[in-house]
Image (cartoon, rainbow, N blue to C red; front, side):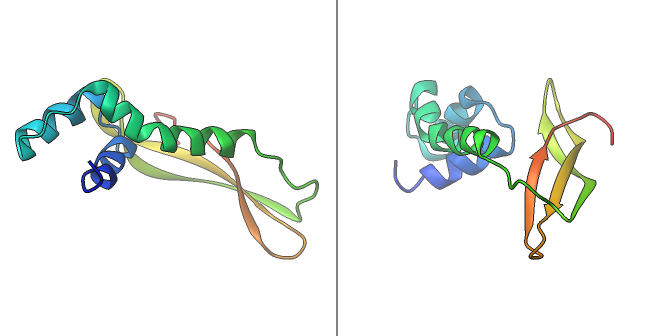
Length: 106
């Protein structure tokens, strides 16, 4: 379990479902992982995303940039989609990702 957990998390962040990951692990390694086991391994990722979304932002930014990057995301199929990103520059020059959101186009 400990050896495969980073792989499971990486697959999950690429948009592979827990059921597909469990099936892949069994096919490749002969180890049976239930969807619940895979979900529990990925819970830390979900908690980190939730903490990011609920954090307090700085009260002031010298500039805000909006940009996008294309990443492979899974909806019904895996396709590259634009992920718009808002980046704030604080008065001291440090950068902070303010938010991001998956979108089919930029």
